[in-house]
Amino acid sequence: MFTLLSWNIRQGGGTRHSGIIKAIRELNAQVCILSEFRNNESGQQLRTLLLRAGYRHQFVTTSPADDNSVLIASLIPCQNEVHPDSDPEFSGNILSVHFEVFSVMGVYLPHKKKHVLFDFIIQRMVNSPTPYIISGDFNTGYNHIDQAGDSFWYTDKLVMLEKAGYTDAFRLVHKEVREFSWYSHQSNGYRYDHTWLHNSLRPLVTKCEYIHGWREEGLSDHSPMVLTLG
Image (cartoon, rainbow, N blue to C red; front, top):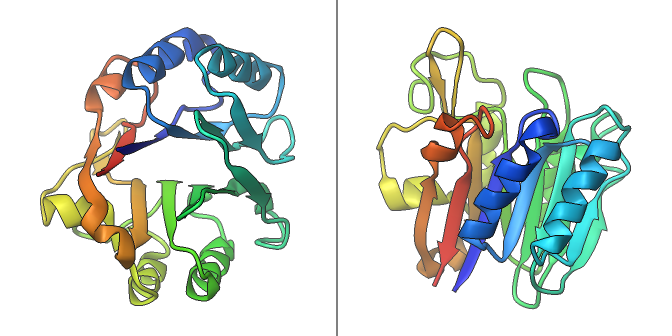
């Protein structure tokens, strides 16, 4: 069994580090993708706590200290890959790790900003000989489905990702159920956080769900997503 946790920890986690690590320890996922990670002193403290929790294999990008980026931490050995040519401004917002039979890409896609990260991701998926799992904070979704309104940017890129042979793992399991991973101050819900995987991995999916309790406890303003492969 393989479990993947992806979680936007909100501006690096800060004073919530101990609670974040306690929750991660209890879940004991083989791989954790933490978005809105910040590569600064606070981020180093978080990495030390992850190391103590057994996550010996840790990878980050060279994003500036105050930028929101991505950390991938794994209990099992893997090789990492950064993508410096993915976007002129936001290349530190995606990161990949490679296992024997599939690869995992962790993402933090900018909210309502122009970027070409989706184009890079789709091209990578089309040309990759190895199936990928893509997980993290996409900051978009399907209008009128993953939110009540139609304010999402880049919905067309999700359609392209599907045409490239990838599946929204949550929809694979839950079909048209409406569920949200982040709420505005006006209590409007949005499903920003997603896990997509290559169609060849579909038969292995046993669970894909959100842990809303972690958000409700104040550990972050996002609900983490957990994917389980059998």
